[in-house]
Length: 62
Image (cartoon, rainbow, N blue to C red; front, side):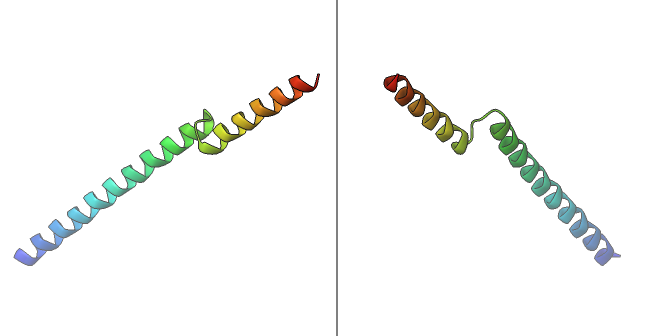
């Protein structure tokens, strides 16, 4: 009987750890998606910087 209780406890612990891991991955994914949509990722920031530089060069030519 005691081994059955131990097995149930181990399964519940595994489920708890799996749930926490899933939540961490989900939160990280939501943060990544939020940054990508609103342009806070490094590529979008770099592209804005390049666009500003090109606009300045274009204004200087005209």
